[in-house]
Length: 116
Image 1 (cartoon, one colour):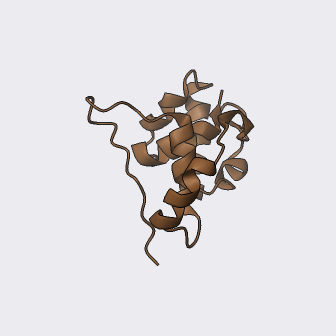
Image 2 (cartoon, rainbow, N blue to C red):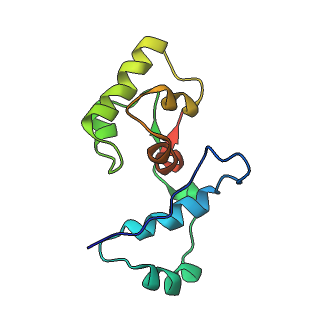
């Protein structure tokens, strides 16, 4: 089954970046068998509160903890930890984009779940 996802382009500076609520709501499209038609029916009834997201602290989390997140594989999780060890700590979550293993799309999906 094909899953349709809305792509967010950061490179186009003319576009406004989506809000966290918008990103979280669109993650519903990743639910197994969620179709755009069903999503359009339920989206206005969804209450999305980013404050309820369980955050991962990128300055203290382990590779095992990061890998448990559905958007990260082992290589990406390990990269977060290795970069932190080289930097001593992260000063900004945007520093994750320095990793060649974490692209902009993955970063945007992770953003609501990251903390310092």
